[in-house]
Picture (tube, helix red, strand yellow):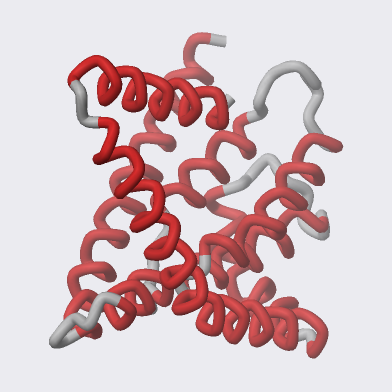
Length: 195
């Protein structure tokens, strides 16, 4: 779906440029932006590979399982409908760990596995369950301690102080997590009254 939206927007841009007589801008943009995009990917790749590797090592060594046990009391309060030893809790913990390190791309596989496990215990297969919705809120608004990708972008674009984003990122993501989980809690409570 997103591919169609991008194709539509690019098509609109090209048509507008043709109609307004700015065809040279299209050529310049294509050549310049393609080079910039490749440079950006090459600058970000080492950081993403490093942290993805560290996450994989943590997973293989059992560190993520220990992290999951550490988070278990917290996760049981947020996800009361998930059985105690369900694999979904481990994947949710892995997702939280990756998001805390600012690695959205590394968090995605764990998030997909968590959703897969949550779907297995979902009674209504064609509707998202309460734990699925709560996980989506937590994943979207999750606390980021080290915004790795943003730091890499700031370094790539020669920021004078790339790490100045760390404290504001922690504050913003903590506030968004608290707000999201609070709203999710009240909506869940209200739904139980309606049933």
